[in-house]
Image 1 (tube, helix red, strand yellow):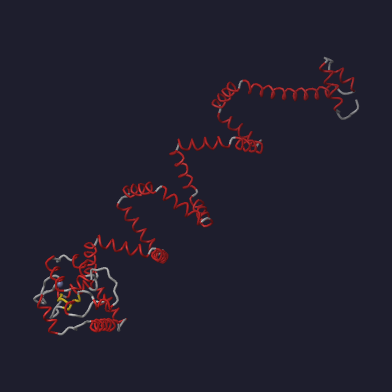
Image 2 (cartoon, rainbow, N blue to C red; image 1 turned 90 degrees about the vertical axis):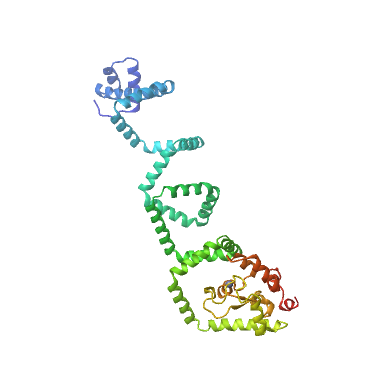
Length: 401
Ligand SMILES: [Zn+2]
């Protein structure tokens, strides 16, 4: 028997002959091969055909009877989960690329539906999702933070805009959340929060300062109005606070003042100079300048008592001075005149406290205000009335008035 390679022609002949029922021995004789060789090739061919057939059958079965087959598979899986897992794994390993490709194309073909289903599921399983994401965050904290930072740095404008929009759209929610959070904090936690906040403010002092400055520049009027409004609504509280602060920090404040005076040696002289110059100017404008007699007469009108609070010169409110001070009802800085009917006696406390404020506005805020005293001031001092008028008159006009 010659040793030739088994050709395709041999295969066809053998298969046809076998199909016609010719015994293997005769087939071998006919094509000049050994019976074992014929047998080997025929068996392989039959096995292959059967494999193809069975796969085909399986596919058909799957199409026509999928639920039954799925059920059977499931049963098998339940009966022996470990071997199922191994089988599955090896299948996956063998068909990695194909499976990936299949998944991809399935996803693209059903994208809308899948996304809708996913969001539906997530809405129905909120707790689960949030637990998962929490766990995932905890397990990948460092890399998540890194990622956020990088993202924020690369999309600063957009991120802060989005954050702001989100805040505005969910303001109530944020407020509620913060309220609840605060309510659930223990005192120790609250203290820790406070410390953290303080620490942060210390660390970011310069930045905050810059920010405040910018805001102030952009909202100057608003800021002033706000402060005024606050002072108006909380005048009592502010006063108490200032008094308390002064008591607590008295020695330090005195030291500060001393230090400031030492650093600004000419300040007091400058202040006196300004006052004298204003007084001189007021004097020049006045029609009949004030004499000592005129001053004494004015003080006598109030029986040498403070026109506002009614104390005499010996009262502690006069802060140890011998005489009551000369109070310009319409302040010199507001173009008031140094004339008899613009002055009234005032104790040191009232004089300092009033300073150059509009007299009625200031006086009505004081605890010692009385209508009778106010009427008396108005009767004797035209400046008290003029000072309330919303006029912005040049000095010459004031004189005429
Ligand atoms: Zn007084």
